[in-house]
Length: 102
Image 1 (cartoon, rainbow, N blue to C red):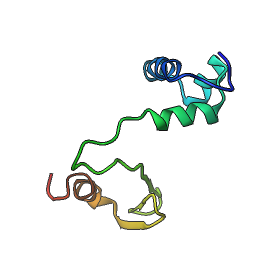
Image 2 (image 1 turned 180 degrees about the vertical axis):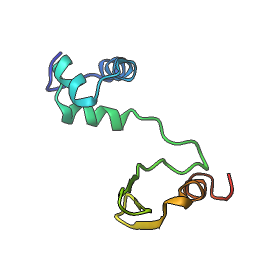
Image 3 (image 1 turned 45 degrees about the vertical axis):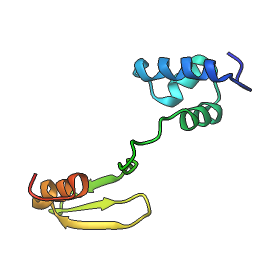
Image 4 (image 1 turned 135 degrees about the vertical axis):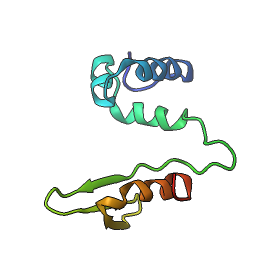
């Protein structure tokens, strides 16, 4: 497949194949000869919008240092939330459902 351009139909077929492949984006692109930048462009362009009234999902990172009973949640904007590891369940309930307890 040409790495310089894709039609919308080709991109849709490629993305459908990717979603069922089990490969990482990098591995999939290498396997199919598609540049990562082009693949990312189509992935974001053809991604369906979130349902009305639903906020878009944002990926966050959660880390816990084994020597400390504190969890650190880093939000996409860079804000960090620190809380006791024993409160992880409640913190996730608040973030996901907007309420506690789950």
